[in-house]
Image 1 (cartoon, rainbow, N blue to C red):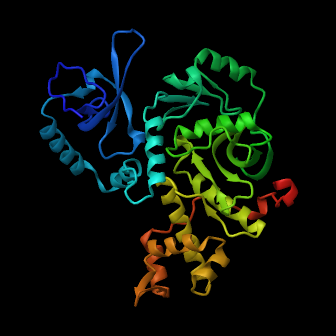
Image 2: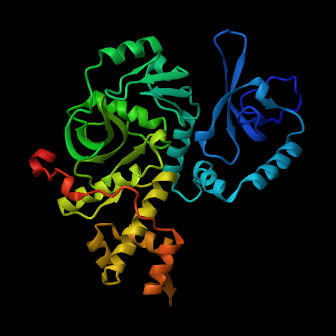
Image 3: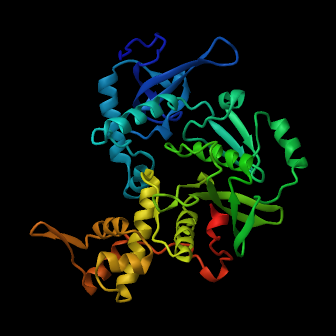
Length: 401
């Protein structure tokens, strides 16, 4: 990897340089991952990865945003300056989008090889934006849309049927002609302007494949794109006079051999921080309860997914302890429907465990519970699922298989 230091030089794949993340912003250390020539056939653009950030921050930039002189000095100075500018409130948002990918040092050789292969295949994101309903959304990650669709800078996606198009004219024509106004499948929950639909990947294969391709634009490690038949999808919609607009979903494998009650969860960016993620987590556990099962999401979780789940588990555990549930991992698991491993993670996050003579023990008092609630570690979900509004019952084994 070379360090380019002549401002007149053209950056090449593998070069280290300084890049303005957005026009007018400070310089950040980055590596050139790929180079492409734009439509005029003369001008290059450069796909860069910013050091110490998640790959969702990777982007295509023009030559004017790249500075190739005095790399070390400028990078250190501007990084320190940026750190000083981050206010207390900004730190929370920054940590949500700038997590360094987890190391593969501690995983087995096969997993490390798969991680390496995944990074290589998905390292360049060609689709930079999507038009989704009335929203224009910056994408985060590579998604394997087929053929020329995967190379488009902008995709236009119908928020009713999930069909994707390359051109705005085709998109506008489609919006007038599209007859679908809600997801296929059965509506299983309705509360005011929110609804949830259960959709079978086996019975609605193309729709679910398109939904997964859309989700992959915002999920790094999602591998479910085309093999959707073993899965059920629980799709959350906002309802208005025009129809049901998809805002997020989770998928669940039929008869999961590992007992997972959730395989993948995605809330589209315009609808994040509205409580929809925890709402779907609540739904996944309510479905498990009605099946008489102890549930757990498929691991590993994404960075944002782990934050959401840990907060939810912690809240549920504190609620159970306040009700006087006997203090013990197995008792808490039976009471809450949460797997014992996830109970332990929640208790660790709440600092209600300690080690005594080499054994993990629980340390719970009324004062500690109140301290945990005041700390904000376990926040009550903004949206609470109302089980009485859920019109769903487990399928007989012959139907569910």
